[in-house]
Image (tube, rainbow, N blue to C red):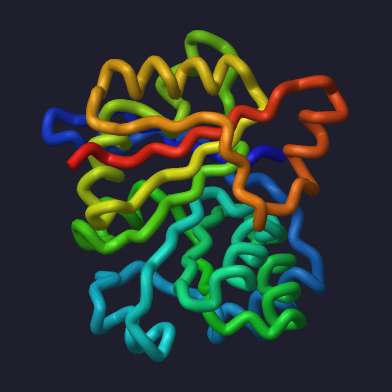
Length: 234
């Protein structure tokens, strides 16, 4: 199951209007998932709240460069980043409860102290909770490509999300995008060209990111992995 994006066309003020989303959570829970969520979400979970420096100091016990991962799945990339960058604080955002439960269990076993998890919609969090110029980086790895043309509006990267991310990133911050779908990569390039507000570098794969999951699946299927690093201009 691919991580879902958001399905709300932008309102005149740039915020997606209420209504249809790109995901309808469908999963079966299990006793193990319920047990993990009950035991570990109180420790690792972050509710919807204003994530200013004072709040992050309470959540992480410090104020450090702040990294957001959108659609973390079972958390392999978020955990790897947290392990490789202990000087950063990481917030993984996901809606799929079994994936969150697996992420929490692995993070607890690995003793990761700088990783937290928000169960919910990343765009809601970005709009309502994340202050301007507060993010060191945003990671969007293997999002749902929504390959049919009529579903293009469902893809995460749109003009209004590029505007939003540019505001939320600190000066010099960046967005990392990875996809194994050529159509989605082309969509991102077209959105970036229309936007014009980002410097774009392609082809740089972060060495810390594990390949298991969608990357390995795409490679086995003979697909190219497209890597884009987006940095807002001045």
